[in-house]
Length: 399
Ligand SMILES: [Zn+2]
Ligand SMILES: [Zn+2]
Image 1 (cartoon, protein in one colour):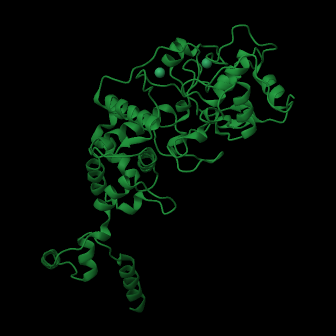
Image 2 (cartoon, rainbow, N blue to C red):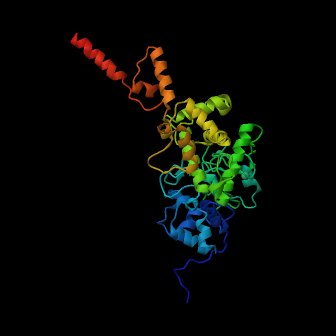
Image 3 (spheres, rainbow, N blue to C red):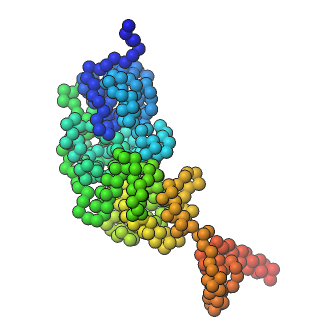
């Protein structure tokens, strides 16, 4: 007896390719079966599906994934691994289908149109693929360079500046074009495979960035990463990425930790770091150039972890508390380096230090009080200036 509710095998059944993104796989399935994308989705899942009005790659819709898996004779687990949700436990602790998600770039959409630059591509990957397809890692803000080809990714069409919307290749066509590929810009028709790649090599900063990109790719592939700080100790990829996300957030912060960014610009040479690019804001929403600048700073700090960060933080008078959020847990390697070196509550001056400080204050005609000694030794103190002013103004009134 035939179960009519069970999905039928499609005539052509492309399997997901290495690290292929769900939306890329679905587009290939439609084109392989010589159907326009939306009529293909409607005939398979009915008119009530809204895949393309949402961020499809963040779906966990079992109906979509099960039908896709069974119609292409693919294991359900493999179908699930094409989603961004499958990065749970690697890049973030808990997946959410909407709202901010560490390292996942937003696509910014209205209806089926996309305005954001949350999809990237490597021209060399597309040009050398037997069947061009889009990778899951191209949706991640931590990648600005292709770890395979060593060239910069693109987050828009270099000819017209349009976002990468490869699922719109058949928009406006009455029938599916004979030679349809998902590699053409749907605005100016530039074939992304023809773009000349720009290599990320030649100077120290680029080499350092390249090494960081390779370590990201390795961590995602294996689930493990070398703990920053020159140790040979391996840590879980989740801990590695969690600490790194805290680091880039501190670098892009509008708050006090932004001094870290200013310190990096001075130490690394601001003119070499694209001085005009503002990197204040949400890292995961930045365009490629801004993310490149931030990741170059992060790579430089990680190279001598945590000496460089601590030097800048001490110079900028940054205490450990500025780096941590009470809302979220912090990766141990990141927390311990900062807490050990920048937590001022751990500092207890010796009797000799207190004596020296008192004698310094006395010889300079300054107030010798416990509060003032704390202030000069960099410990917690109460700023009494405004009380002094108030007292003075009170005196004036009474006179
Ligand atoms: Zn590539
Ligand atoms: Zn274009």
